[in-house]
Image (cartoon, rainbow, N blue to C red; front, side, top):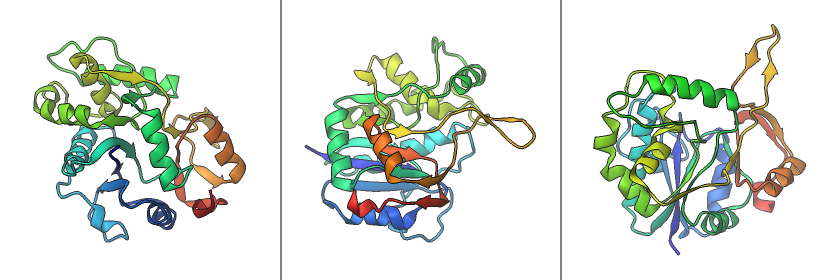
Length: 256
């Protein structure tokens, strides 16, 4: 059935390293591979999983796509990797490893993208993104969730065509390309993909700071309880994001 490759584009490993160590250690070690693209090669319990080629990245820049491509290249080295799922340092698994792998295989028969949760981000990103495109008509685009699941044959296509498609994107500018590039190229190539269920829940609810400014970023969780985990599971998610180092985790991942 093939392995699941977890592709983590991060600053440094995970915000909750202990939790993820338990997650990966208490399951079938032959069912997955982990690949990490850190911003810096700092020592970590997960240092052995760092990819060889590290791309200097900047927030919102095309470099995030370049770093994702490096993760994909590393994942292709194992011929058994069939499912490629993107995660981040702030991700939290809603299930144990074996269940997570099983759900990914059952739910994502094709490469699957998901609609973006934030309408404001979608519209704003589209405006900025259009400024970052040059010399090619990519049609009408809206942001999609950057955490998608990709099948091996499509990963191979993304890598083979990267030199061609990347030339149309402005590199040194905030264009949120990680929310457009892969979905956009998939559309241009007529790849057999789906728009479906997101793997990851993010809280995009609008809120204001102490002086009344609207915060447009996903909410960072102060705690994660069993009731919250149950709710996100019922809604079809496999992960939750933004779990911070200070987040109070009230659920033992080994007893899901």
